[in-house]
Image 1: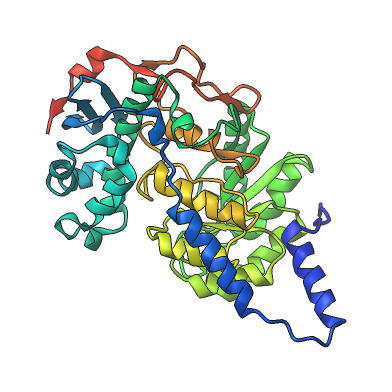
Image 2: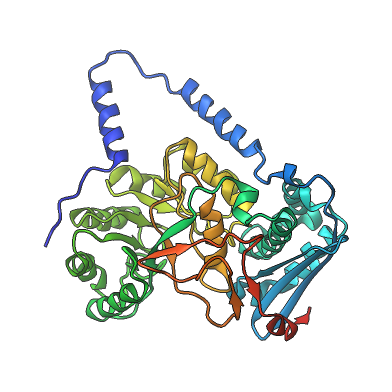
Length: 419
């Protein structure tokens, strides 16, 4: 079964512009417009995110601790007035990166005013030449600290995290069911995808194509060719379907696969080429009608600025752990909003990544219609008075209690030892 691809808004705009230019003899002057975009994006980057006005007096960081129990990492921050914030790290990454937290970040923040967080982000980047570590090595430990600080500030202000970084646009979030069944045949994959969608009741899903940074190789062979039509046939015309190649292709092959997705009306195509192939990413985006998404692996604000300004991406996907927190990610979302692009953040699949993602999305005006869901972490004993934290009919309610809005069992925290 083939479903006719409806023109995307981006394709309509591109077609309209091309048609209007064909009927005019006046040369299009690009430079002033590009300069205006430069100023617009730079103004957005300079605009504060954290609402300092909520905190009339200093919030001095007295203690900043990293605690570990087995492979679970908890960050605990305490102010001189006794306010406390807790975060759970991206455990899959922190098991390797915790020394960077302890040696390169922790000493810097002691004695600092948490209200000045955005300035502190600039300063810690230079502290001990931390900029040389830019990527997951720096940003994951730093995001872990930021989430604890935001939890503390939210408790002080008696507001959920979303209200510290913006207005609440999305108190409830529709999710898409994400999965990764590479290595299994198309038939095996579809049965597992069906089970996950049934469990979450999601109205959208995302599955993997290609072989992950595989230089055009599929895994196993011919899986992608069979799975693209099979997913649409299985779930029907009403299901929103996304596909993620994790940088599997060169530009030529990515375009071929993207056009196959267009035949079956897929809704976005994530990371068609390796994430740092910026020119090739734009080449694919320009060539296909399906919206191209990316940014999960992007560590650089300046590179996001280029990707957005040059329309190399249709959808931006900062990962709030991999990109260093919600403050930096909100600046990306704002730049995207200025160019009428949605923000659909990537979620790191460990710890409480899904919960941080929900708070972030709640405050993003240009959030996409569905957001990534990989299941809840049932290993962490916690409760929320304002949300069941369940996916009900594919929708999750964002907690509204102060800070993160959840309480982690104190007995469980007590099992952790300070690093």
